[in-house]
Length: 298
Image 1 (cartoon, rainbow, N blue to C red):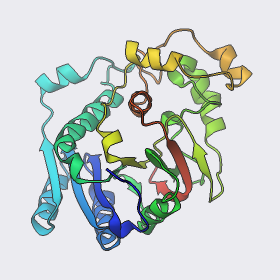
Image 2 (tube, rainbow, N blue to C red):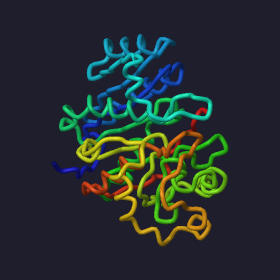
Image 3 (cartoon, one colour):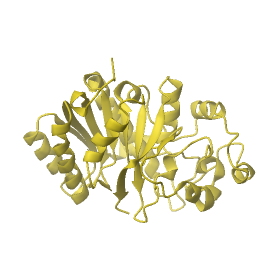
Image 4 (cartoon, rainbow, N blue to C red):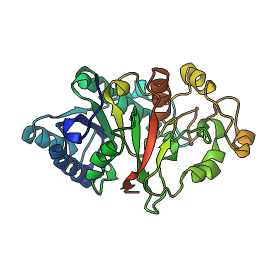
């Protein structure tokens, strides 16, 4: 399949996302994204939600009834499913949120795989961010029309306009997350990553998400999400060149994964193993586009 394009009206795009009790932000973002249909050859939607109690399910149902190419899947996570999903908990006994997010992303991925070949690219977006200008998504495509990519992530920002999603970020100078640096990552490394990036930068990375990312469709469905430091992740991590890591990271780095982020076992951001495996499958062109900006509600 050729991915060369001169304008976005040649692109078939599938927008996907997970949500729970999405509320006002979900409604605002979906309605904004629907306006993008005039920019693309095809723009369809597939949304996954579970256990919503605020009318999210009803809203998604109404969208599916009104708009062709809008699909959603609603699920109730009962006790039997919960017992299979959760293997870690925090110090107060609360189940690990990252494990539930990982489950939801994999469930959506499973739903998308049979139809992925109908699209050129997949826009994976966290629907709790505030998308001020959806036209920036089309602009990102145009900035990369002559630069082949497998994944371009947005520059999701805090309300202080600093890069927010350090948890999913890995690059030659920051190869370790809290799964190796424990509290030092949260106290120091995270703040080193959360910079103020000027517009117009295209930053090569090993992993990033930032609240939204555009994937080549065949790259996205080439593997699955994981939030555990299993043998496969450790093998892929070991193969990376970590020589550019700062001395402070090396001094605080554990040789083996450690319990972190307040959980009882080593947990890792689900995007990181997903992206590492994608790279291992031959899809290794990852970038952050600092001109594609949006602000998280928190």
